Image (cartoon, rainbow, N blue to C red; front, side, top):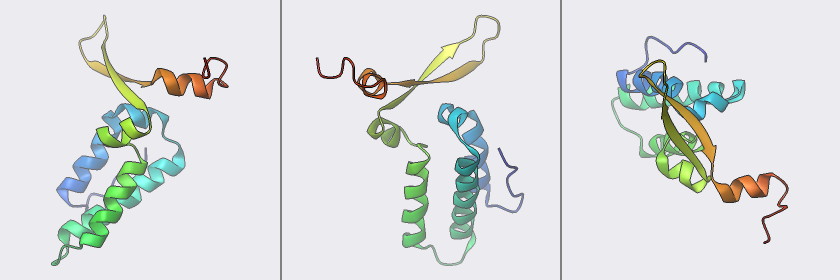
Length: 114
């Protein structure tokens, strides 16, 4: 995860920092993190400029959806985050679980048609 910009708006900084804690980010590639940096930069610029841009807001939200950062976007992609509590420590860790139908399709569809 690339370091965020200290000059970003506090909301953009918090969003970017929270990505590290999100289960889907365990599967991010370098290009996903680069996209997240760009989204946080656009978000910050929109929040700090004098006039709020609805078009920029829509673009930011669309990119956030592509990064699966909302429950709705994960459901549409058939991805579910499950929380597990470790036996050794009490902190929750996220595990990404793909729903059964998607799992079957990804496995080559051996059982998908039955």
